[in-house]
Image (cartoon, helix red, strand yellow):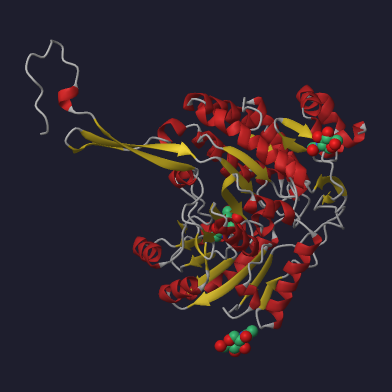
Length: 533
Ligand SMILES: *[C@@H]1O[C@H](CO)[C@@H](O)[C@H](O)[C@H]1NC(C)=O
Ligand SMILES: *[C@@H]1O[C@H](CO)[C@@H](O)[C@H](O)[C@H]1NC(C)=O
Ligand SMILES: *[C@@H]1O[C@H](CO)[C@@H](O)[C@H](O)[C@H]1NC(C)=O
């Protein structure tokens, strides 16, 4: 690779490279980053694939190809899973304190490299640099939580089940685990997966999204630097063949998936049929209910940020607003605030809304906006014709608001996954709750109100896994779990928190009997022991 391509891929200017010697270190110590060709990570080595099939990685802001990623061959995928299997026996026997130390070092390395990780995310995924740092930060919190493994993996004990008999449980790792990640959170979602799996003593096979592999590769390099032994984490790339491989390989015991419903249902079914544990987080349609007694200023700002941040490509984006009663009079002001957001390439100063991931994603969002218009919604703000100077070929859509939407419209039924806010109206809180409960998804929802009784009624009556009260994107911190429900989740054990530990461990229950009369006596026994009780 030429010097030019080094700098191109790392997303830094020449001045930044010259200024910061540590970037040179990065360039020379992790060769996979300086080549537009993404490597595989097998048995502790970053290796070139022998495949003949490649997928281009375009920059979403320009659609220039900035790299390519291999579809790993069958032999390479087998080598990766075999490496995980070999590493499992020693890693699972490594003391829990040593595993904790690896992740204590890892969290520091992620902090030290947060800018580099964010730069890779913006380059491949398109989101703004500030959003990309947030992406890393939310994943980092899961790694920090993983450092509490010494408390999290405690078993249970119950003494004196019957005379001289005690029962206790151990939590133990389950074997080789695998993660399949989506394109929208290149750092956070992989970090929900392998750190929790590995700190429990499992080894891990990761398949990042083929659109955004760079960040996961750097995360792997940092984990190796933190002291994770060879083979404890392996990375393969690809599409359907790689997914099927993971669902079918007998050594893989558990699969974590985040992404679309179609893929999630498929992986859940195929993996479960093969006897694996599967947790599948899928599509969402998150509703925000606006009550007339809410703090208007705060509510409108929160709505704008949650609907259009990350260009709406968040599973937890607040994509649907229900204005109750006279709060509908706030709509013109909502439109004004949404107009003020700046649409631009993610690495440009002041950018609020970056591009969508691909031209196909843009075409889909545009057609859903059009369907709304045709089916009778009112287009209050149209982002389809947005012009971004200098980035005319990017996949940009500006903030868009459709009002007067009804539940039978396509734009309501489909997850749009773009910067489009769909607005419904309701006469009462009860009507708003019925709307939400009739929707098949159950990822998240929020209510904006200053009335505690209204908030309490809402949180009790609404059938959704994650609820915010005056909090628009209620993604729980890692001491809790990510509790999407209904059509948003398949499986029975959620991501991270206590449930994450449960997912990646199995329980061994030991019942012991040590008869009191068999205890070694301090002086020689002179009487015969009595038998029985
Ligand atoms: C690619 O093929 C060469 C020659 O057969 C082999 O030595 C190498 O290990 C292969 N690489 C991978 C990643 O499997
Ligand atoms: C939705 O339902 C309303 C009333 O029930 C009806 O007037 C309208 O035509 C329907 N729209 C679509 C797109 O089916
Ligand atoms: C929920 O959120 C996750 C993670 O933020 C997202 O990837 C997924 O598409 C959404 N679906 C649900 C409701 O789990």
